[in-house]
Image (cartoon, rainbow, N blue to C red; front, side, top):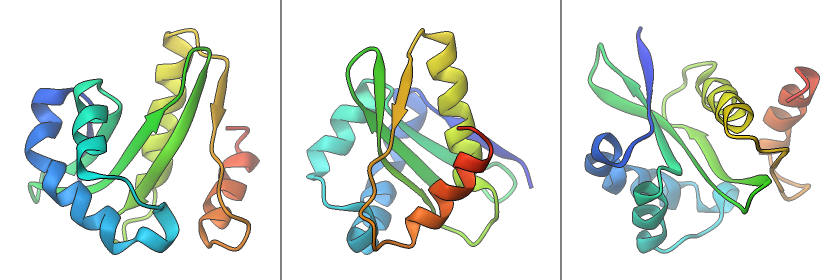
Length: 127
């Protein structure tokens, strides 16, 4: 399997409807954003899509916002039951933040959500 991260608008644009569908299907975990939010974040290169080149399908996404010097993770999700997609997306975000002089990456998750298991694991790696 060859997963790449699409992070510019030209590559991400065609996948925005699927991103919205997957986010809406996971609204309890991810929260709700208007469809225009995804378009806006994509236009700012703040919506990234994990893409399986072999099967030619998106397998996850990460959306972030924030203001310098902090990045705020808005959503991160794997669509397929493929281990490591979320980690890959977050690792790329860490690299991006380091290359662009950001100091903080913030992810606020409600205490009762399963997503905390993912963020606890990421914390073990000092992310």
